[in-house]
Image (cartoon, rainbow over all chains, first blue to last red; front, side, top):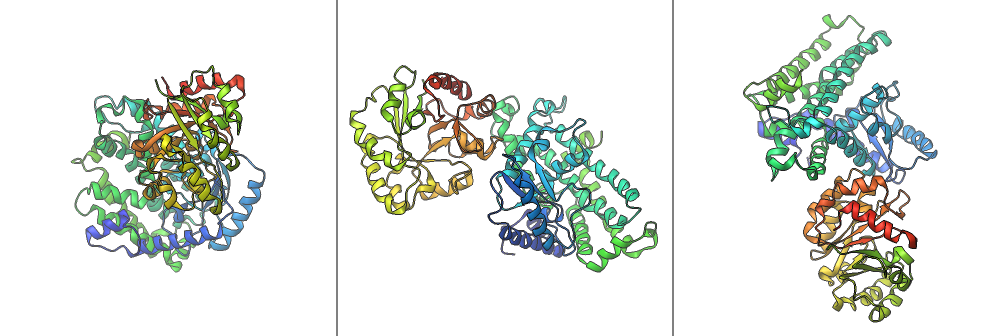
Length: 359
Length: 230
């Protein structure tokens, strides 16, 4: 692959393994994004970014993937942004295998104001929460970067700079964990799990199997990436800083923390996990098991027959369905690898998980 | 005391004499002589020996912000003739065509970071490319431009960290979404305070806010508050 070595590729080489489905999905994602960038040239601006999310944002794009997108506006409001969003929708629909989800979370224009100002409270709707956290966890842009970069950093600025315990350090342990952000990742993960049940009822079971497997794999991956990013604030930023003892007492270092976490979130979630594993390998075999399972999951999604089968599987038919059971087994391997990684009592990650990951 | 002053262009556009007059009773020790429009360059440069600049600890010249490749040589030559004065020449990097000419200015070439309209010089990444071409060039940090590109101030922070050794002067104003250099507001003051500690107290600060005469003093006070200028 003629590209800079990504953490995932580096990890695969270190382990002497090849995750062909991950490589293929990543390659297709980049190709698609480059093509979309060419299509959208000259229609965005520095006040707007055309943001793609979901499998394209995560670089896990397969031929059956839809393309979730938003027109992110961070600047002067202009009535013609609506016309622009219609054009973008038409152009993207011509590329995608199916239209964006029916919830209306994506496929429209989104102002930065609610994303930055409405964190928590009554006005932080399910939709706003989803948009905000997916912007951090799995977004990328086709075209100009400025609006997305600005909004991402400003969201992080709110989570980090308003978090008293992050700056003070957790009493007794001296851990600098961004609780505000970590709690929102936990909330988002549980919200996705609850919404699975909601959609099951709302859609009378239609599409339950594929959503279930995605929840167990790609949605869970988002939570994993979010947790690891939060823990890296403590594990990596503090010790590597030239003045660790002053860091959290001095307001002058605040932009540095935002910059650090922003760089952690910059790559797709698989790379966030891979770069963690390169630094902190965890128990033997964990990385192979985790990425091996994820590779098989993407292999199933990229097979149109398998995907269609899971998409059309009636509710209640899962127990006797070999394809679903195979997917479920993969998700169990993935889960077990995560349990090995996060709950290893010998590692600092294990201690952090015990202290902050559950209660 | 940190040198602080105005751009003549912000006070009186092409009329640099009027701008200097507006500053005669103000507590300023730095001045940027602006020739932001190319027709302003010759009148300014031909007047340099007649201007009363002795009160200023720091003087710089702002080169025209737009010219064609055909016009570049005479503009460069005129500016080059002023090099014996040792005054930094502030340039917008997107205006330069023949890099080999401008490189001869050495550290008197002072590259400014740009607002979001411009195709170059907006971020650390884009500036790094330019400083590879001009390894001796110095840096004019425009805090208003940096904030316009990234309101989180992280890019401003990064510029000040990465280009700390090159930092020659600071431009300050609030740059609106329509790219106008306005007076500082409550919000921009708070934003600028976040990175002010990274600006050494020896680096001159040049105000670019477009102000009427009665606002010259109040804007100085706002800038002192925003950047903790002594």
